[in-house]
Each structure stands twice: as structure tokens, then as C-alpha cells.
Amino acid sequence: MKSNLKLTAVFISLAFIVISCGKTSKEGKMIPNNAMAVMHLNTKSLSSKLSWNEIKQTSWFNEIYNDTSVKSWTKRLMDNPDSSGIDFSSGLMLFMQKAAGSTEAEIVFEGQIKDKNAFEAFNKNLAENAVATKDGDINLLPLKEEAVVGWNDKNFAYVMSTSRFTDKMRYNIDTTNSNTRLTDVTQNLIQSCKNIFALKTDNSMAKNEKFNSLLKEEGDIHVWQNTEEIAKSSTKMGALSMFKLDMFLKGNISTFTANFDNGKINIKQKFYANQELTEILKKNFEGKINTDMIKHIPSQNINGFLILHFKPEGISELVKLTGMDGLLNMGLSGKNITLDDIVKANKGDVMFAVTDFMMKKDSMNLSDDADKSNSFVYEKPTASFLFSAIIGDKTSFNKLLDAGVKAGGDLISSAGIFYANDDKFFAVGNSQQYVSKYIAGSNNKFDFIDKIEDHPVAFFVDIQKILATSALQPSKDSGNQVIMDESLKTWQNIYSMGGEYKDDGFAMNTEINFVDKTTNSLKQLNSYFDKISKVMIEKSKRNKERWAEPDSTEFYPPMGMDSTVPAKP
Image (cartoon, rainbow, N blue to C red; front, side):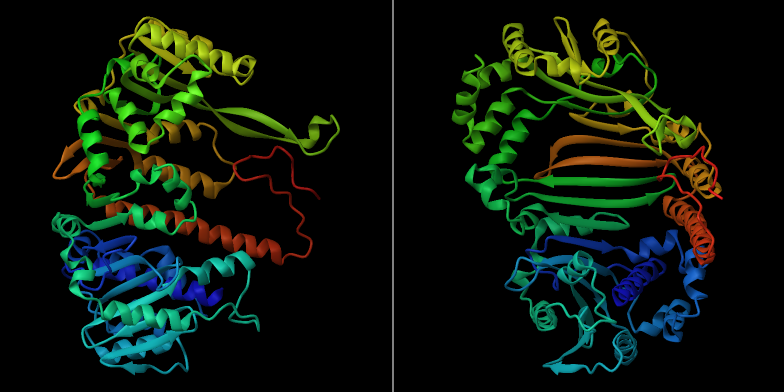
């Protein structure tokens, strides 16, 4: 496991290194066209926002660098990334693919070479005593059964088997210092590595128009996700195809372009589906959300919500696409309702919201007796939850409501579920007073409505309010308090809105907003995680000192709970 961690640390370091360097590569020639996921780092853009020298000033970097167990070659790499022989002026790709002849996944890390001899020497440090072999113009080097690296005069590719990591975690085996060995996958990795270098253009991502369109977008990071290929690796895919639910997965591609702008991370998203599903979504999921649903919320303390607008007929079309309409109607017939009733009962406007988040004191006994002195007090989160919908045909709605009440019976009230409705709104929540106030209506003003009102989908989370509420009860752990204070200084909120059909896909845009609006978000993240790592490093050192004391018998309450019980003598 230690060798796993070392290898992972090296690759993480390399990922940070590229942030400080050169221009991007837009080619997908060494990526198979059925790759499950791909990440591309625009090193030129990233380096303009956060330099390697800034990363070198962080606590975690210096903790690793000053560790006496860190080898000299690792320190040379940290001092001078060019010593790896990697060309950091070109782009970097990280992708996941299926292993040859298997459903197991492999992670591939690839880029271009600047100095072939330096690159070979660097990799021999990762695998002492290993000998590189030649296969045509490709050099192949196994890395302690953890991975295989291949390279030629221009390009390199590391191939790692995810099964190696999962098996070791599952069985808690350290193959570095044990005679126990898991199945040797080296030959499989070598074959996968050779396949990558031998990829034909037609079998690669080079000719994929959607992928090329993604890389042409101005961005710091590009991500490609092929949900259909991911699903094919699951044994549950067969069950989905039996009910034609695989229609929601076929041709399902998601793309993301992230930019670390001043004061926010801006993420442009695009979702693609197969032609049948696309036609249904285009026709039925359009228009604008009904902002009256938000204004009716009987609280100014909104912590988050998801709101949608669609044509109710779309529900029926989606069910029929799967061929389950007959089966569904058969199941509903015993409740005196039909699929048409479900369609008619609503107008296609629904919302789920969370408000009034707060921390409430609670206590727990440490023993079975009634001695309250042997207990500790902790903070328990509570909030108001609300689901609402706009009513369509009243007769169909009443049929659905009656069927729901009969099915739920006493379970509804005993589970703390309450509902209310008038001729327009239906609401379900965890308080009768709350849902009744919602139905009675209000006209609350929220400054974010103008930002989201012109889209069929909107999502919002107020991170600052949630953190501020959590921080009302100061932590007795000084390190945890530092993390909370830094979080309050950093995070503001998240907006996500869109759903419109554009250029063969459905577009969304997400903003992760920071409190500081003048500094680019990558620098802010570097600073934020530096301060957190400093706290974690200090806490780790204190814990090691405590465990080293032979008479240390301190009681530690569960994470997140502040104990009122003093340390045991």
C-alpha cells in the first residue's frame, strides 16, 4: 500500500507541476474513442493563474520536501520538474478506459517528452532494478506491478489498473512488504499500453466532433464523461436493458469546461443524449421556471433549492419510450388512477427547497444508566424541507392525493410528513405550519431570482449561510475552528441554471462563487487548502505525540461532537 501512496503522490505532484507551464495540446490521437472519462489540463492558462513557485510555498509541499524519508530524486523533481524529462510546455491528459478483454477499468496518464534519457532515468527511480524492454519504437517499463509506463521519442503513457488499488483496500494487503501477491496484471497493462500507441485515428478521440468542440472552448480544465461506457462496466446494465431503461444511457455524454475566474469557478456543461431521448427533451423541457414558487417560501433564510419547468406530456412520452406504460397502468389501476391522471394533475412546475438550517443541541449518554453526568452534548443539524408543485387538472390531482393518503395512511403523520394545497399549489414538508404558510402565500424578494428566472432548470446553494450557522457554536478544537474561519472567508454560494437545447446538446452553467471577488479562484483554492493542510499537519503531529505517551487515556468524542466530559485521569 505504501508503494501505491508513493506512486500516487508522484502523479499528484506532476499534476501540480503542469499548472506552472506551457501551452495546451488539443489532440485525442492516443485516447480510445470508447474512453469512459477524459480530463485535459490547459497548462498555459493554468500557469497564468497559479505558478509552481506559489505551490512550493505551501505547507503540504514543504512538509513533503522536508521529510527525511523522501528520496533525493523526488526532491530534485520538486525543485526542478524538467528533471523528469516531461515536456510541461504541452498539454496533459488523464483518462479512464476499459482494460483489454475485461470490464475492469484502467487509468491512463499521458503527455509529451522533452528529454528521453531523463524520462527513462526518472521512471527507473519509480521502479528500482526494473529493466525497460523494447517493442518496436516503444519502450516499456513495469513499475512494481502497480503500473506500466510506455514511451517513444515524443509521447509517454502511464497505465494503472484500478483493480490493483481496490483489491488492496478490500483485503488490506501491503504487497510491498508481504509474501502475499494479488494477481499480476503487468502483462495486461503492457498490452493496454501498446494498444494506446497503436491506436488508429478512426478508433481514437481525434475525429470525435463533440470532443474536439469541447477542447476548442476557452477553459482551464476540460472534462469528457461517457456515461454509456461507464454503465457498460456495471453488471446492472443488463437489468436496465430488460426494461429499456438503457435508453437513458445510450449516447449519454457529458462535457465540462472549468475556468478559474476572479471570485468564482465558472463551469460550462453540455449534456448529449441519443436521438429519441433528445427529441422528447427538446419538445417538453423548455420555457422558464415559475419564480412564484420561490417567492411563496415562508422564509428569507433559503439554504438551497432545485426548481424545474417542463411540459407534463413529457412524463408520458418518457415512460412510453421505455415501453413500461402498460405495466405502469396495470399497477396504477388498483388505485383507481392512470398515467394520464399523473400527467394531467400537474402543470410541470416542481421545486424542492431547504430553509432555516440551524444547529440544535442534543446529548448522548455514554452508559446505560440514567446518570446524566456521564454524557456529552453535541450540535445536531435541523432544517425545514419543502416539496411543491403547481396543480393542473383538479380532478386528476384529487385522485392522486386520495391514492397517496390511502397508501401512506398513519405512516405519513408518524414519519413527520405534512401536506397542504389550494387550487394552485400543493406542498409537502416536515412541518404542518410551514406548508400551510407556503400555501397561504407571500411575496418574498430574493436577489438571485433575476439571475435564474429565464431558464427551465435552476439550482442554488447558499454555502455562506450554512457555514455561518454551523459556526455559531465555536469548536473546542482550535484546528477545526481555523478551518471553519477560513471556509467562511472563502465560500459564498453555488448557482446552476440552464437546460436549453443548443448545438445538439442541453447546456447548463454553474458558478461556484467565492467571497473574495478580486483574486482568481485558483489562487484562492491554493491558499485555502494550504491553511487546511497546515492545520491537519499540526493535528497529525499532536496525535503522534499523544499515542507515543504510555499513560495517555484521553477520551475523544465522535467527530463533530464537543464533549462536556473531562478527560479521564
